[in-house]
Structure formats: C-alpha cells, structure tokens
Image (cartoon, rainbow, N blue to C red; front, top):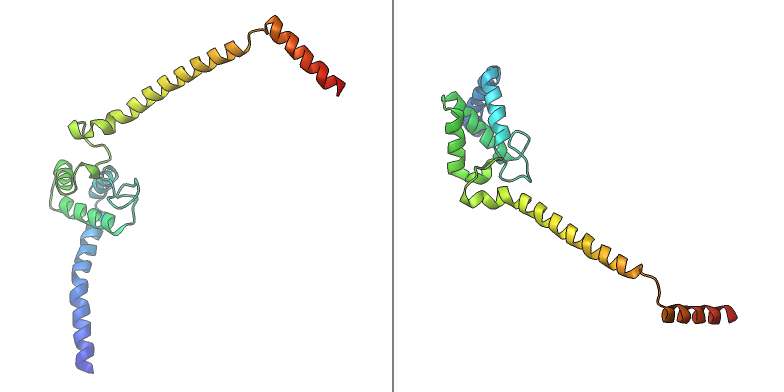
Length: 160
C-alpha cells in the first residue's frame, strides 16, 4: 500500500512539473511589465478560434489560454511581435487576426460592408421614389363620374 501511495505521489509530481514550470515562466513574465504589456497587445490583436468574435485576451477558452502561454514562451525566447504574429498566421491562417491584411482572399471582408451599404442606400432611394409616385397618384382629385358615384354610395348609406 505504501508503494502504491509513493508511486502515485511521484506520478503527480512528475505530471505537475511542466505545469509548475509553465506557471514559473508566467510568473516571471508577469513580473516584467514590458513583457506583460506586449502579451496584452498581441492578445488583443489575435482572435480566439473557438469563441464568437472574442480576442484571446478576453477569452477563457482553453485554446486561448494555450495561445497566451505560447505567446509568453515566445516573448521569453526573445521573439519580436512580428515573428509571433507571423507564427500564429502560419499556424492558424489569416482568421486568427482581428485585422486581416487587404489581399485577394479578404477583399470581400473589407469591401463587403461598404458594398452592402451602397446597395442599401440605392434600394432605399428607389423605394422612396416609387412610394412618392404612388402617393402622388392616389392624391389626385376625383373625376366628375367618380365624385357622383361616391355621392350616390354615401346617400345609400345614409338611407339605411
């Protein structure tokens, strides 16, 4: 029984050591305000891949935590911000960036909202013109024949 407990204790220590080392790295970087500011800036530029429109700085998803740890390690290794972002883009694609570059495959992303706005304005202007034409057509005075028929209908209603 003592051997089993000792084996379990050794196993727990060995399994916890990478986590402890990671926590030590995180603590060392957290003590460095410049590194922590870099981490925060990079985390705000990178999108969490599993969350709905959230950056990895705000996300509590496991992947976001892993990405923050990865960034911390790269900062500790002396990588520049550009190298870290290039690594993330290489690994996860342009989707990981909150502001993807303007290029052929992202033109719809950048130009789509503007195109939709222009189409919406055109549709609104056309609708307003047609509506104004209908209202103007409905507002013209009754002809003599229409007026006499309307009078006849009103007299019938009064007699009932």
